[in-house]
Length: 386
Image (cartoon, rainbow, N blue to C red):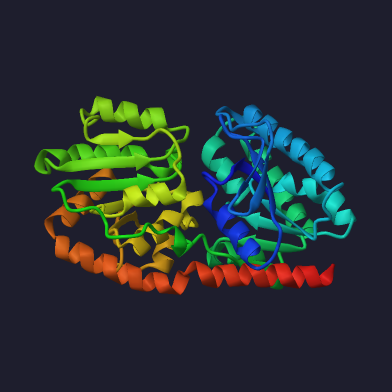
């Protein structure tokens, strides 16, 4: 597996797929980025992790392009070196970027099958970050062309939900080539024992990437509205990202920095789930932009499985998977509407818990073991063709 990101922290989908393959009898190597303090190589849950001397950096278009290209070149060289010792049957490439598939050129020439795993539509992700800048539209068209070439090059395409599957098929990817592996939760990661004892706090939680399009500043603004009437309100934000300082600054400006707590780093998945469970509300505050219209956050499934009442922006793909009986939706992009939803959760705990129970029942349709089975079956089909 190749992933432009740290492993396993911050790449729960990759880790879940790797564990599924290991349990099915495959040997798995992951080539990833390297966070400060991490070893260059180690074995994690049976997966051999090979980390390249690169870490994510924040910057503009050129900086991002250099980072993506640099990682692609380094991973190409490292994979070629690894091939001297191991003859890979499948190379599983995780986007973005889509052009990372070129790192699989040598293995493919030697008979390996190639999976392209589309976590996000790269052109939409790029437009979200750089729309309106000079050259952005040309870059978007280039990324759309790269996606077409990459999906054609790949032996199989994996993606995260049916809306992406439909979109890829509409753009010319043969439907039989696409497998959906949901970003669900491996239930073995759920902490043992009962949730923390009730302590009177109104805990509102968010965990994951902190970036502008995920709308964390809206959560801070909503908290500022609700705080005067809810003295026990505390907002806990677990994660990191390029909007972290804006979120912290917004909390200071609105005078709720004593109510908004941020870790400023990603936590291991089991640890963050331990901290999240027992919260009064888990929030998904994605902004109403093109990229988020088709987003299905992993935390949605995690809140459902943990029976944390879900408060979510009303966006198409989320609503396609959960109903208003299971999730309290608010008008996407509105801090006032989010504040109103938090007030509703605080005022009617029985209704919030009833929705949480219904969401937990809905989760049974999205259990990880079903996706893991589809993924392993794909590996076996590809292996039979080598």
